[in-house]
Length: 310
Image (cartoon, rainbow, N blue to C red):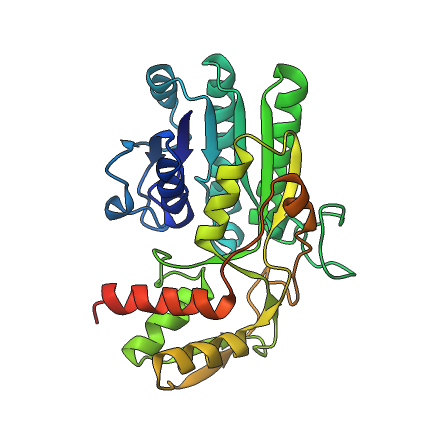
């Protein structure tokens, strides 16, 4: 199958590209290498065709015309909650207008399916755990709002143009290649700081819990969704919450030394407790996370140990 991966030089997208190529698919990549987006030229798989372009650019039609992808794994996004609260207009331009541009090209050039990287942020704070696909979505940040809008646009495009789709609502994805210097990705940020002996900021009281899912498992969900899960949404997560304080203790244990920590207030848009029921993904996609948190943390620390420079 010919698959186009938007954001394919980024943290999650580059792992999706690797998994697709390993499975024998022919892959092309669109990524603008935005400095705040995590896209890095060194992440690009050399067996893929790479195009440096923003998904808002009308010239992506030329790429669709040349590549004629059967499917698109759409991971390009403004992914930061903080940036979305600081600049909601930019967030909407990328996550909404960029997606519309992509969908228009998909219909025009015969793409059959979109696998969409949605987010657990579309739920916001909920009354009952675990979150599942039927939990009401009430996003509490512009990022969550635009990710939810993407799901609605997919339903519209399916109704109007019969474009198939699968939406994957990711938990907190972590692992090798995640940007350790931005505000997103607490595991990458902590791993880098502990390895370098730097202070760590712990927001709120540190007991807030998220569902941390390893990036390779997320990539495998994208692979499975190419041919399954028609017009459905799935929670892609582990089913367990882990606190920020617990992550710190686990990472300290792996690295072998502690660092100084300091407290900071709650960030706008942050959610205190989220973990997911992933049974629908198991039934509909045959997807089950394969990597335990302890194993994933060790793989992540090993990656940063090899790649970090003081």
